[in-house]
Image (cartoon, rainbow, N blue to C red):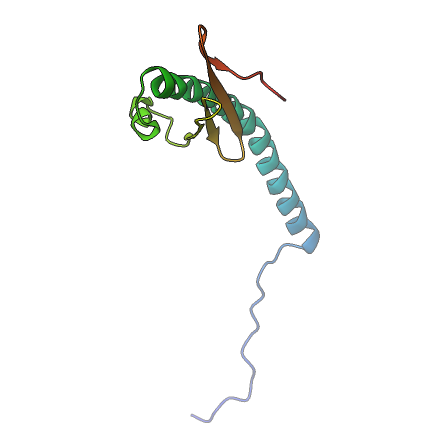
Length: 121
């Protein structure tokens, strides 16, 4: 059979117009922004509660109980893995923080025990 000189039939692919794609992208971006906004508040609230508990507990452990700061982390409850501790032995204070979200300091005061520093917004 001789070769055929006819061209193969072109197949057309259904493609969305550029405007429709940009609407989908903008809609998806808006959805992500709404989820991030609604999810951020509970995250910061939990971080603030976790750092306040961690600072006060670790301050008491360190300056009343006389334990090393690293040993005080053993007293953390489940869910506090993101909380890190640092101490200032001169001021007798411990700071608990969740990076980029929350930080709280508790200071040992004679007769009062460990007291949280005033909250600053």
